[in-house]
Image (cartoon, rainbow, N blue to C red):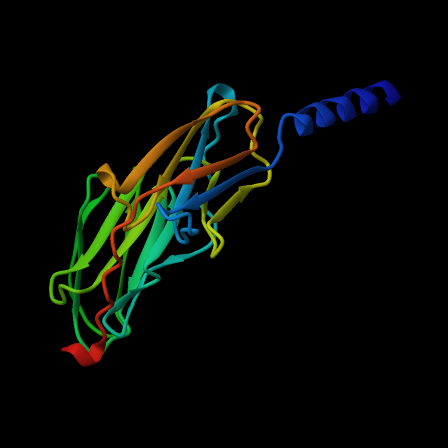
Length: 207
């Protein structure tokens, strides 16, 4: 029994040694931090792992806006779209990752969509053109949004080579995404991106 415990402890220590924090800082062309960028690490080979759906995912319509503007969900997640506005909405997306249409539904009604493919899904309303939002559907367990300092940290990232993707709604790149290779020994990376000016939000009073 003692030998078995020692063996199991050795396996746990070996597994722990294979993972260490990976820090990614995203900055714009002037060196300022970029917040609300979605950073995804794809380790190579057996180290790759898909995320698990957990909790409830909601994109509400309130004050003629989608809330939140940016959501990150795992592949297979069900997302509900409740309407809290005193007007009808018609939510849709023509994105390759998910093409759907939720025809007119009124206040206190809700619809649900399953997102079964990875990718970026741009949302719109067929009634209110200024409404927009994004859902990033991820197939990697190591996906995070940058904070106000432009940082995303993966505390248990495997020490394996792989690639990093960075997406941001205003990023100047095909599909709004850039990629960067990651070496097995790299634990801290800086990613510089170019951004377009952010559009001004449309409020209820603008209609």
